Every structure is written in structure tokens, then in C-alpha cells.
Length: 365
Image 1: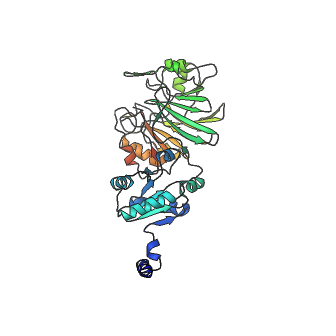
Image 2 (image 1 turned 45 degrees about the horizontal axis):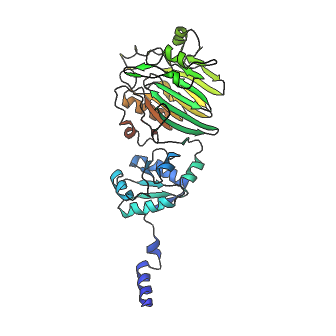
Image 3 (image 1 turned 135 degrees about the vertical axis):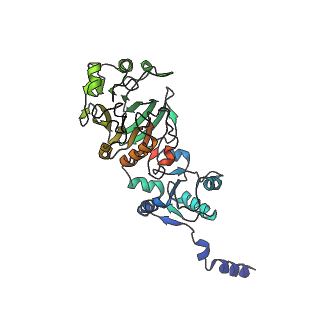
């Protein structure tokens, strides 16, 4: 009987080669990167099969999360993914993703590749990519949505206040951009929030420039950076025009960049040369706060951006289609659509799904 079983197994496996043959392909980091690039036009589907907690610590831009440890992995994969399009999977080290690749091929996915070495190996080869601390919404003590990225010396936290109002926190320093106290029925009590080390104002419209907010946030030593029009109105602060660069205390670099309307009939909203967008460089990370603008030619000069805030509020700023063009021009690693009013932004992640940009929708209405 034992001899019969051995012969049967030998016949089935042909000395073991058929049993061990993989239906998917293992790729190292360089091969995996090349595969992603080569297959973008074929609708590549990039899948992170780790846990939500691991994903929150950082992931490859453009990846969707489907945890292979969950019992419904196969069902979710079949619902979320197209079996005819190529699939690239990764986990922490490559072992779980190998299991995921096996499951996917058994379920009829035609082309599946697995990253050997996993995200650990990939992140070592991509040190310039910000480590995402939380890819899902969390809230601060004021109930505001927050997102964080790691730098070489700490963490930058982005607090979503409202509309175009943002608080950026790093190393105990607080930077406020366009803080306002009231928008329609919404209001903010800045007296309860941390005082500002820096306040940046893009232009004089009431949803960006608010003296009450500036005064409530100011303390001794607070630095206010504004365009010239607002500096004249406030009577103090550092006036910057398009193209100006400043280094603030603490090594924070600020560059004022153009922000204006270029569609016929809209120029009156934000004329060229008056308003600012800002690029902040904080501990090596470049953050672009576009202000009120359309997809202007000067965006081609906005480079190496880690985090971008782009407005989407037609007719005053950009349409969703304009924002997509801007994002593809700038190529930020993380994108926050902001200042979006009643414009529908929920489709933007799908519109940019093959761009490699991590699009995060927060309450910047």
C-alpha cells in the first residue's frame, strides 16, 4: 500500500515539480517598481494585504487595503478587484502576500505578482516617501480631523479646521493658514486652541482673512505672513509677493507662489499677482497650500511636494477636472482637496486612482 501511494504521488506531482509550481510571480523591489510603471496603462491594481494598523503606519501610494488575515479576504478581493487586470500584492515581508497571491490565482485572477521582501524592503528603497502615520481619519481634542506624517526628527500633524483653514503642528510649533472664526452657521473658538507661532494669510477675502481670528491666536512673538494687500490692511506682519522666499525661526522655509484665476470671466475673483499660495518646507517635507487659484501654468514649477492642499470650488477656484490636472502636474505624494464649498469632491480619489497620489477627503467644505 505504501509503495502504491508513493507511485500515485509521484505520478501526480512528477517528482514534485507540478505541486510546487506557482501560478503567480515573485518580484524584488526594482522589478516590482518597474512592473507598476509598465502596467499603469493596463489598469494595474496595487493591493496592500496587511492589517489596517500596519497600513496606517505607511503604504505604497495608490494601494488599496484588503487584509489577507480576514476571513472574507477572497470575497472582498473579488468584489473590489477586476480579475482581468493585473494585480500586484505586498505585505510586510512577502509571506502573507504570497498566500494572498495564491488565493487570488485560485479564484481566477489572471495575472498576479508578489513583492518579495514586502513593504519593509520597498520603504528602504524609497526613503523620500513620507511615512503615513494615519491613513484613516482620527480626531484631535477639538473634534477636528487630523493626519500625520513622519519626518527625520518627529511628526507633522495636519488639523482640518474648515474650508481653507488649516493648523500644522510640528515640534510644539503651530502654524495656522487662513484661520477664520465664522463661515455661515459654522464657527470656531480660537481662544481654546493653541496659540500660533506663525499665521499665514493668502488674500483678503473674508473666508481667508479674519482679524478676529488673527488676534485670538496671537501671542508675544507670533509671526504673521501675508500678501501685501492684507499686510496693509492689518498694519503689521511680513508682506510677501509672488516669488519671495523667507526663512522663519526654527528653520521653516516659506515661499510665496502665484494664485489666481485664468478662466475668462473669472479673473475678477483672484487677479494675477495679488494673492499668494505658499510652499512650506518643514524638516525636509514640502507642503503646498495653493490658496484660491485655478490650474495655472506656474504650477509646473511647483516640484517635489510631499503634501498638497488644492482648492475645488467652482467658479472661484478649480473644477474637479482642473484639480485633477493640477495634481498630475504637481504630483504630490498626499493630496487634500480643500476650500470645496458645494463642489462634489467624493469622485476625486477615483479620478486620480492610477496617479500614485494618496487622496484624502477631509471636512474642508
